[in-house]
Image 1 (cartoon, rainbow, N blue to C red):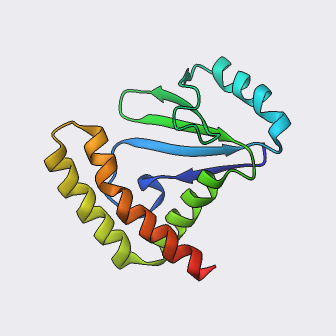
Image 2 (spheres, helix red, strand yellow):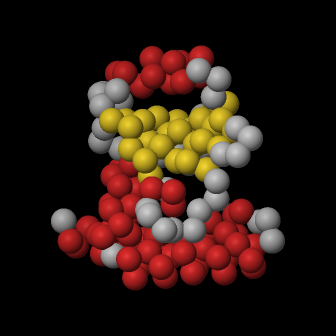
Length: 137
């Protein structure tokens, strides 16, 4: 394993979030992916494959008060890099984090349990934030 990165809304102080912790488990190389996937499967996580077709292998585990989503990926994974850029930008720009929290609350109220609507409603904000973060680096 190269790194485990806390990403998602719970990784940004003060940001509204579901009781789910999102983690990216970055392995040392593409060759290490199969063994890492098997290790996580053996650790009582539900395996969901690569549903986004972006080279991130998704696992979940739910506990009473909190759930976990673990994404196993290679070190050069573009989706992982974007998630880190997004997280760091929100951490560094509290006004942008507040705007994101407001958007999430509004979408959650409008979605009425439709997670595709909720996720889709955040897309433009996320893409613009990543663009801004990329300009900064």
